[in-house]
Length: 87
Length: 221
Image (tube, rainbow over all chains, first blue to last red; front, side, top):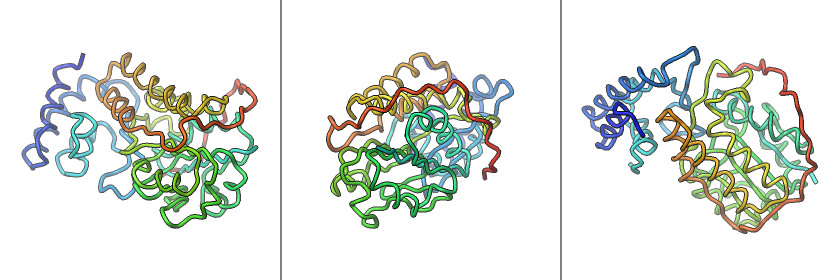
C-alpha cells in the first residue's frame, strides 16, 4: 500500500502543469524522498531511454523536486508515471 | 545463426540497460555484438541481414532508434528493408512502438517488441562500472532479460512478452518503494508486441556463464 507521502505526490501530479502545481509536486516529492529512496549510500537516479524529449535522461532522485518545479516536460513525464495520467 | 545485439554505452541509462544485456544475454548468443562505439549504423547494416533476431538497447523516439552517442541505427524511411525482413526485433528504448515498430513490420520484420512510451527505471549511479549488480535497476531490467531469454530459448514472441509482463507485476507486488513500483507499472502498461505473435527464433545453446564480466571502465557522460 502506498505511504501517505507518496499519495501526496500522486495527488499533486494530478493537476495540470502550472507553476503552482509544479511547486506543490516538488515539495510533496521532497517529503516522500526523505522517507524512502533517499536512505543509504547508493545514488538512486531516475533514468529513461528517450531522445529529444525536453527533460534529462538521468535525474538523481534527490534532484527530482528541482526538476519537477522547473521543467513542465519532466512534470508531465512524472504525471504519466506516478499519477498514470496522459498529459 | 547469429544474433545482432546492439548495446550503446555512453551515458547512465545506456550503461545500465546495456550492462544487463552484456551480463545476461551476450554470453548466450553468437557474436555479432555491437557494443559501445560499435553500436553504429554501418556495423549494424553489415550484421543485421545475417541475423535472425535483433536486440537493441539505446535511446529512441517514436520514429527512430539510436546507438552510441545517439547515432541513428533505424529511422522510419531511412533503412533498407533487407536489414529487418523476417527478423524478430526487440528494442529496449523509448516510444519506438508508436511509429518505428509498425514501420518495421510493414517492411517485413516478423515481430517487434518495444514500448509505446518512455522506458523508465531507477538505477544506482554508484554502480556504473558494474551495472549488472544494480538491484534497483534489476527490478525493471531483469523482466526484460527474462523475456529475451524466453525468446532465445525457442519460445514465441507472445510468450516472451508474457514473461516480461509477469515479471513487472511480480516485482511490483514485492516492491516497497513507490517510485520503483510506479516505474514497473508504467513499463508494463507500455510494452507492446507487433506482427506475428507466434514468431520464434532458433533455440540457442544453454550456456551459463558463472562469472560476471570485469568492471567497465569506459567513461560515461
